[in-house]
Every structure is written in structure tokens, then in C-alpha cells.
Length: 523
Image 1: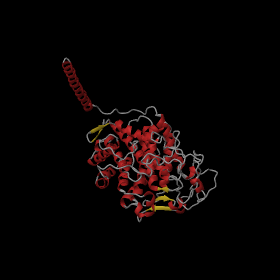
Image 2: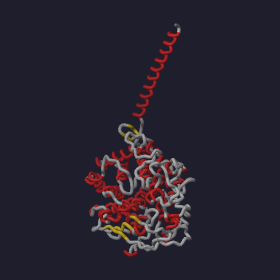
Image 3: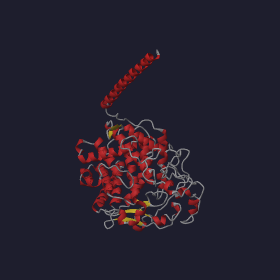
Image 4: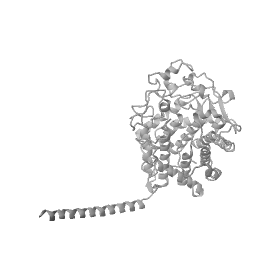
């Protein structure tokens, strides 16, 4: 009989404990909310801090792939297994198109992705040149950029003529030989008023405009780049048309799905390079309404520049003068914020396009392009927020800090560098386990081998690892199930690197190599 009163006492104390816990929880929640509401702006960073060894080492490796991809007469050649090649490119048109860079594992010079490579590399240098300099990679990056822009200048001999391809892809892809030993014909392809190419001309204008800022200390070269950029933009805008419709044969390799994004991207860079408000009006006025897809986040890539243009223009909202604020500019920033909200994993609007390991997943072919591009944009946007003292962004009512974007950017970089289910670094030369069968002709053929167009195929089919290391190559990457066929050189979907991938990974690593310094004006 005496048990019941004791039981009631224990139950009573339990009720009291629950009530106290609820009260304490409510107090903590209230304090936290008040703290969040009163939270000041994010701290503005100072000069670059000590380098993060992981990202610094990876950056030093990543920049080397540009040297591997160089065409022409190599100056101060750092790659023992590379030599002069394609010295007569352009000669049939009395042009010197010997420079530039090969696109991937082949020997083609494709204008659209090559110009995109230059624009992204320029952007990386402009934003993170001080951080590149900390680890002695600024000058190599500028040298690689100039190797492309020298080519682009020569590829634009007249106001309304742009050479957008060197080589015939069917012929080129029918060979497996070293670039130094090429004997096949190298025809030229151009866009002009009769066969327009708004997309490729505008992307080349963006490359020239952004590079003019990189090289502004050399006023003559910078002015030359800017003149070409303005002419190309006028040509692209006046004679509108997809280059892959004007020249259908290019669609097999780099089919363009639109040109409005390139027009906005080029005008954005021209505004930054010139300060001419007509370019700002171009992107915020009728053309913005027509092409910008405000409110609809997209993926950043060689084919679609909208997300890049949105982030680049949001820089003006964060850091620009009040006299350039307008509703169109705010729409770019709002859409850029939506892009960021889609990237942060626990955001209410987070994209579900991810592997189980957290890698952004968009395309089976060259899978790493989109996650690296997304991470590069996230690092930039995070630094714009920090530099402007912006504490947070809102994603459907939930708030996220610059540190959340930087955490996402690091997660994608870390995946590339080996923090993935395969425990493989997809950056050749970094770590202990990286691809040995890279789909790359020069890397796969011994330097002392004598091969022509056809008898070099044995090196593609060889079961031995590449005799030459394609250091710095960012290969295509894993499948959706996060597997990678590592012993098949003919697995071009996964094992082929591309030059534009290198620009993106160099940009990302440059943003992570050390704590960011405050973002400065380009001009």
C-alpha cells in the first residue's frame, strides 16, 4: 500500500523537471533568435593569410596543365615531353594561329571553349591574383592567359570576321599521334556576316574585355584587347545567330544552345572594363528582360554563362556605387542568390542533383565541370558578401552565412582532391591515387616513339599506364554512382581532361588557397 504515494512523488518530480526543461529551452531559443536578429555584418577580411597547404599544392599542380596544352613554338618550355607543334596553323589565310591551346586530349582548337577558358582564367586572376601570388602562381597564370589572348587577337583579323576553329574534328579524331608529329591538314573555320556566330563572337569579346583588365599595366596590349572586344561585341550583337546553325558541323562537338547568355556575359565584362554605362543598360534593359531568365537559376558552363553573369553583376550591387543601382541589377543579384541557395546542401531550395557523396551532378560526360564551376561561383559570392559586410542571404526564410557558401565550395574541391568514395584524386599529379590512363594523346605516347596518324592507335589501346604524366589535368570524373573506370584510356567520358576544366579548378583553388583578402574594384 505504501508504494503508491512514493510513485506519485516520483511522477510529480518528473513533471517539474519537464516544465523546467521547457522553460530553459524557450529561454535559449529566445536568446538565440535575438542574437540572430542583432547579428552584425560579416567581418570584412584583411590581407591574405597563411596558405592552406592542401589547396596551395593543388593549385601549383593545376596550373601546369595549361603548359601541356600549349600549341605553337614553346618558349621556356617546362614540360619535358612537349615540343613545338602546329607552327603553320593559319598560314593558308596568311595568319599566325600557331598559339592558343588544344581543347582536350585531341589537337583541335575550338574557339568557344577556348575563349571561355580565357574569360574564367581572367576572372580568377582579377579576383584572386593576390592569393595566387602568395604561392607564386600569378605569373604562370597570366602567361597561360596571354598564350590564349595572343591567339584570339590574331583570330580576329577584321571587325566582322572571327576564326573559331583550327583543324577538322573528324580528321583529327581519326588520328592518335603526338601534336609534334601531326601531318594531317588543319583547315580553318570562320564566322562572318554571312555565317554569324553570336555566341562564339560574344564569348571571345568577354575573354578580350576581361583580359584587358588583367593586363592593364601594359596599356598598349590592354587597349588592343579592348578594341577587339568592342568590335566583336558589336559584330555579335548586330549579326545574330547561333554558330552551330550557321556551321552545322560544329554542333557535334560544341553545340551552342543559345547566344543570349553570351551577349549579357560579354556586355557585363565590357562594362567592368570600360565603365561605359551603355553596357550596363544593355544587360539591365530590354536584353536583360529577353535573355537573363531572372528568377530561374541555371548551371555555369562553357555553354551557359547566365549564372556567371549574374554573380559578376551582383558584385556591383555588393560593392558598386549607389549611382549604378537599378531594378535590373537587383534582379541579377536576386537570381544569383537563388543560384547560391540551390548549392547550399541544407537550404530549403537545395538542388537534388547530387551524388550520395555530395558532388553536384548535372552531366554524365565531363561530370566535374559543373560542380567545380558551381563551387567557383560560391567562393566568389561568399567573398562579395564578406567584402561588403553582408551577414547572410535568405533561402525561403532560412538564413545562410558566407561561411556556408565557402563550406560548400570546399566540399566540392575536397571531393575532387580525394575525399570521395573512390578515394581518388581526379586532379592528375595530386595525392597518391590519381588517374594513370588519362585520355590524352601526348601523354599516352612515348617521346621517342615514331608514329603517324594511324599507327599510333596502339598507344591508345595499350594496357600500360601513360608514359608521360598529364600533370594538372582535371579529368571528366566519376559516374553518378561515384565509380570511375581507372584502367581504360579509351574511356573518354571519364578519363579525358579539358582546358576549360583547368580554368575552373584553378579559379576555385585560387579562392581557397588562403583566407580571402577584401575584394577590390577591377578598374
